[in-house]
Amino acid sequence: MSGNQSTKRLWRDVRVFDGHDTLPEPMAVIVEGERIARLVPMRKFDASRATDCEEMARGGVMTPGLVDCHTHLVFGGSRADEFESRLEGVSYEEIARQGGGILSTVRATREASEEALFDAALSRLQALMNDGVTTVEIKSGYGLTVEDELKMLRVARRLGDALPVRVVTTLLGAHALPPEFKNDSDGYIDLVCHEMIPAAAAQGLADAVDVFCEKIAFSVAQCERVFEAAEAHGLPIKAHVEQLSNLGGTAMAARHGALSADHIEYLDEAGVAALHEAGSVAVLLPGAFHTLGETKQPPIATLREAGVPMALATDANPGSSPLFMPTLMLNLGCVLFRLTPREALAGMTAHGARALGRPELGRIQEGAPADLCLWNIDTAAELAYAVQPGRLRQRIFNGRLEGGISHEH
Ligand SMILES: N=CN[C@@H](CCC(=O)O)C(=O)O
Ligand SMILES: [Zn+2]
Image (cartoon, rainbow, N blue to C red):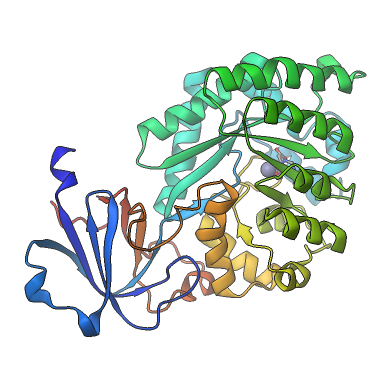
């Protein structure tokens, strides 16, 4: 919008969580165009010098727009039947070995048209946005052919074009072994390395490359081959690692400079040290932990002591985390993993952004893109404390008020 560039917008008397901490006193926040222009303590704020600003709101808690750095939002079908089997005692791994789980979503996703995938993902994404998300990562991984993986990535890109949200795409070709390669997992990794990654890179469809390193998926050596191919195409890497067992995938990913290691319930001290050394982010996914009834907790205290940044994400997907509510994850991160509310919120703002290689996002600081949420609460901790939809008062994307209570109409 042309008028947007010169518009100055003012929020007064807000408590600001800046991506790491709550600032010690109430603030005035001024946004100019697409960026945060000034942050002024109210005690020093001179309203007579802000007459060129449109006042947007007074009071409330302002946080960066939430960053959901790990989702599988684009998929076909449902796994409600698998949910019931798990309640009857069949494990996630057992279901996968029987050809269900991820592969059941692969069948439904291959059958679905691009339009149908788009429409289904649109409403899921809107649910995340209504709960404060302004940046979301979306993975492929339910296509497992070159064409079907590209189809998923195209849908993800189109979602970002259609809605006021930043979409970061990740190619997850090495998510599961498709039935066509049943006894030839190395052959499938060849396809990922020699065809999928080059095609996604050439078409600008992937911002990063991910793998599932697990007994029911791919070995450390196979995942390393995928990372080498990603590097050859200039794409950053991330990894699903140590979710169900400790294979050592995290240390290998860290050696390759991974942006993040995700799940990491079974991560050991050496793995934590490797993350620290590489400057990688630990992405915690309490939705999957909760849904699968896991008992092995990620090594939060060791990560905290080592100073490894911890991000928190929904892992929104049809199987292990059919949970499309980021503020619920703040609560689960605290209750299940003993994060502090401050850590949980930093995990879904500044650290989530870092896990995507976008450290300029997820922060409230002068010069940063103005992706902001204004909440009807008194302290930032309340976001993690209560699970209560409807608290988002305003959602500002790239300097523009989107949804919520609009002062423009
Ligand atoms: N762990 C592997 N991949 C997904 C689950 C995908 C699925 O079950 O459909 C995850 O992050 O939990
Ligand atoms: Zn995942």
